[in-house]
Amino acid sequence: MSIDVDTRRFYDELSPFYDLIFENWEASMSRQGVALQALIESELAAPAPSTRVLDVACGIGTQALPLALRGFRVTARDLSPGAISRLRREADARHVAINAAVADMRHVAASVSGPFDVVLAFDNSIPHLLTDSDIGAALAEFKAILRPGGLCVCSVRDYDTVLRGVAATHTYGERHRDGEIFNLRQEWTWVDSTHYNLAFIVEKEGPIGPQTVLRTVTCYYAVSIRRLLELMSEAGFVDCRRRDDILYQPLLLARAA
Image 1 (cartoon, rainbow, N blue to C red):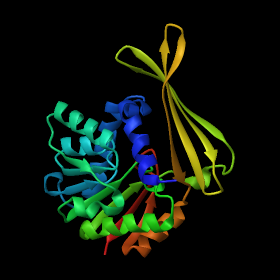
Image 2: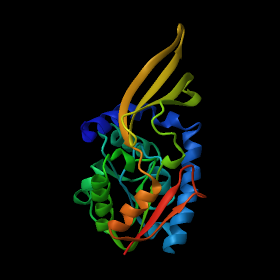
Image 3: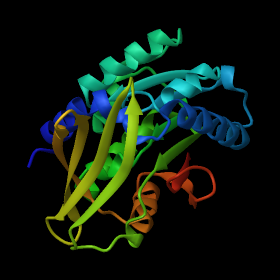
């Protein structure tokens, strides 16, 4: 399996619907902007206008947009051209400047001009890398483009709470957009004890019932938070730690030595 091709296609296909993951995307972005500004300013003791942030898995802008709107200098990268295209449209609609381009997080340093004060990798993006060596390569890139003492923040799923090896369906509930009704779900099937395929399905209500408008598949590495913190330390980060009190997923924080 090529994680480059599969992951890129998955998010290219998902990007028109990604906002529907959230019951209210705008409200979620606002909450995340407030929480991340407070976290970054408390960790770095620096105001937003002087802080450079690199979002290495920006998607359609769920973190990049609210941070830019709050005065941070945001650079955004993502593997998916479709996601980057939508982020640019969303930024234009909000009259906010974000340097957005396509890049693989394992090689992101070559696509930007550092150093940065903060690197973000949110919404369980790191486990799209299917081996410890790939995760280590990405973390080494993050450290290379951070200034000394700079902050790395990743949000991840806690796989210690997941029943491994058992197929599962995770539903989002009903979503409304532009007068249309959608239902979203994930279907998990396990490849082995540490990897699973995730099918993301979007159905739209129509005159003859629900119709599938998207079915796209990707693969995840169910890597534990303990192992991710070890890999951060092996990449040269210090003060590696977990926070569960900020957003909807655990955050892993680390400093560039």
